[in-house]
Length: 115
Length: 115
Image (cartoon, rainbow over all chains, first blue to last red; front, side, top):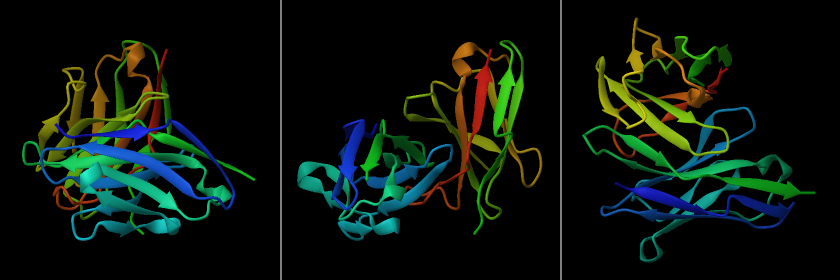
């Protein structure tokens, strides 16, 4: 089964600083990778996804992620953090083990943005 | 923009009672999912549903759980006899095609508290 590992359960950055949230995957086949964001008391919202079309994926709210096969990584970045980016971020991998899509999530990283 | 809705937003029940969590997926989607998130833990896959059948289920989804699409719009998760450890946030999701590249759209969740 495929899996993702998120390094760092909590990350703090200053407003305007670079955001880097780490995700590594484990997969025997080319993975399909996603980043979701969860704002307090809300559901999961898709930020971006990698479907093998391009290694650098741009998402909503200025986020992007780069798929690096050699490092088995799919880290999420944003050049300049905004207060509204404070949320929990989940990396996820999608597979079809029995012919139907199954998404497996990482443990999540809570992003704190300090004014 | 179409969205997945869930009711109720919060359900409190006594241990041993039956609960039904309700979801209205996006109208033209064909694949439906339930996930749960125990407080402080990661989002876990429970079950996927397509063509009025369970297509995939996790080890968590035991005989106490069942899913149903009683009409053309609702998708429900029933827990027959709730246990304390069933306390969690339950998310419903839907997708159009079920392919690994497909985006699953999540509802806002139902927080289930078992006393």
